[in-house]
Image: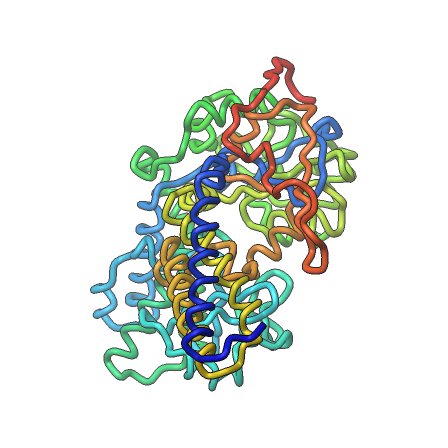
Length: 495
């Protein structure tokens, strides 16, 4: 039945609003009791550890974690390379590394010199587009891209690179944080001083400078020289994890001790991923304890030895390790995991250190309260939008404004510039899309494996599709809730 006056209609809408808000308030204590355990392993695909015979690991940010001091070091060295070798302005030395400016998974438009976050459907999250250190107004973004959608032909290629006509570069690994920050700082300097420059040249120069920090060995020498300050995370949990599934590098000595090679059947350094997975031309070379490269042909990959380069096809031939009996862990979704799962059928585990921080934020009362009411208000808007009279539309517009304010607040809780690594306002990010495609399981740290026995099966949540009714129990994995894990600690070696 329709009300007869604008006042009655307005009062009726606000009464529905208040009733919905009260119902939401009543739900919050129940929701708050089901917070997510940060030490959970999350499944995109069903997988049983009982089926795994071989475990493999990337090194940086999988076995070894570094303090933010290393990123400061990379930023400073690369900045100075730009100044000393590429003749960039001395004024760039005024810029210091900002550890909380960017997040992983962002896209960079090489030709427009814009850094942004893109969702799983190739839409730019408005409000997260930055030129230098300043946000670009939404209207300007829409004008540049004729909307907020990024066409497939200019998106980054399969590995997130800007190549073969693709103008977008996606930054996927943790080492890319200082690179994005340096790009932003140099852009900012040029803009502030009205210096005309070619964005493509800037991108290539910064990429080369950052690459030099790694290729010339500057970073690794710095790690060896001050391993405590760089702070490789060497807590005992990681050692226990390797011992449970076990099957000339000071870093590994520092993490698990001088006998670290006893834990691994094969050790490969400087594998040059992702080329290692596709380039059949590079043979393995054995490396002595003093770092000398030997020239003899490799017929077997022996335990206790260290090998350099090589390729996956030769590796498979020499070891016979194939298919879903191998579980490989890495932090870089493209370089570490994509080819292994798509071409070779290996099971894959992504190490996402940022996950722990984001889960802790999502467990806070502020986030739970805001997100619960945001979802309820969105549902209310969807239902009440049919009331098109001016009085009703005035009320609904107030609700839209409130919803927008909450969306911005939930973004800023994670990162003031770019928000969450995993979501735009409501859609998964492009990073999340690739994570769900290329990783069977994901977790903040390798040590999360200690919470599960080696016969554990990981089951993905059955989240309802848009056309499905959520008739099954609430979509909270019991393994992810704050319930003590029933771990069955085994003492056996490799499974």
